[in-house]
Length: 238
Image (cartoon, rainbow, N blue to C red; front, side):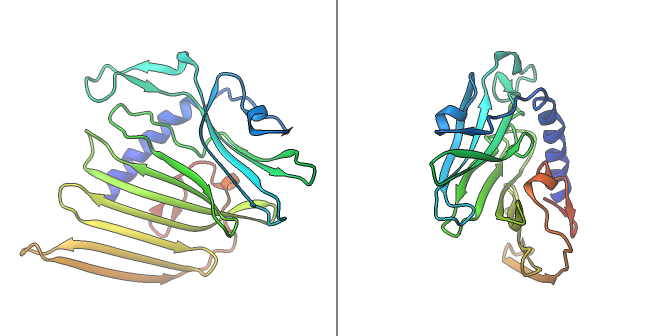
């Protein structure tokens, strides 16, 4: 199941990269989030919260272009009639004491596109938690072409002047067999937990839990990851 999932995601990223070319640069500063969104782009998700722990609310958002030239007809006969290859941008702005929004990060690659006609929307939102951690969620579900489904959570903390990956969780399952594998990785403590759920010949659910310690010399960041699911870590892609 994992190989199928990785293969599916790899194809997704190849097509998605095509739609991410020729992107504009967001403004370096602005007075409001409305000032920062370029013409002919729409908001997919936005959140306010204190990311750099200065007591002032910051902004993170995801926007998508609306150019009709990036809409392709689906000739496969499966799923939606069109495929949307419009690029998406993750923007993060810190607010200063005067209320001005200052750009801290723009990622043209980290937010995945819904670029398969049988694919549900993969981007599942961005949040800023009470502790200042930036949480980005993805999910994969296909109406045809794959029995696998999965949920993925990335948690980033602003430190060392970067948004570093401090935790990752994933739930992968097969809709036909109901077998699943859950991953829980804490990059700050160097702990990784894996729980596999299977069924024996009598259809009795079985759990297999594995815990690993690891050493990571340098934390990954949104900038160094660039795209999801391209970094191989302990046998999985995230």
